[in-house]
Image (cartoon, rainbow, N blue to C red; front, side, top):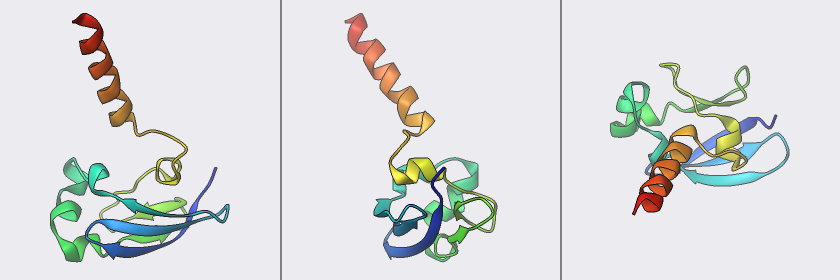
Length: 96
C-alpha cells in the first residue's frame, strides 16, 4: 500500500502530495470534500490549511479525524461514491 509522506497546499483546495513510492501528484480535493466530516474543511480556508500527512494512517488528515484514502489520492483506486455514480449513470443509459 502506498502512503502519503508529505502534503503542501497549492491553491484553493488543491494539494501537492508526495508518496512513499516516489510519485508526486497535485490533486484538487474539491470532489472529496463533502459530508459531515468535511463541511468545515470545504468552506473554511483556515480549517483546510490544517491538513497534514499523518504517518500513522499513511494519508492526509485533519484534526477532526477526516482523511482520504491514499490509494484514491495516488490514482490507483476510484472513490466508492464515484463508482456508484458511474453505475447509476450507466444503468439510466441502458434503460433508455
